[in-house]
Amino acid sequence: MIDNLESNYNCANAGQDLHQLKQELAALQEQGVSDQASKEAIHRLENQISFILNKCDINH
Image 1 (tube, rainbow, N blue to C red):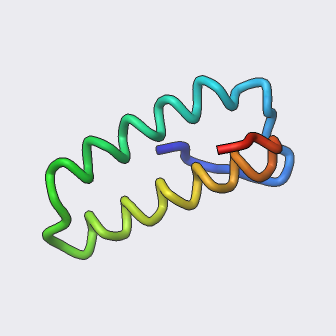
Image 2 (cartoon, rainbow, N blue to C red; image 1 turned 60 degrees about the vertical axis):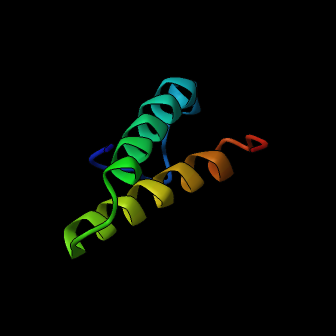
């Protein structure tokens, strides 16, 4: 998970960051959502992916 995404995010990092975030999301989803902390982590990863896609105008 990326610690801090802000409006000044550098889209030059988007390819690497998206790859990392999607891998983390897939790993959490494979484990199954069993507790609130897991649900929150999945939600945060989904939000970070959406932020980067929107900020960097990437078609998904």
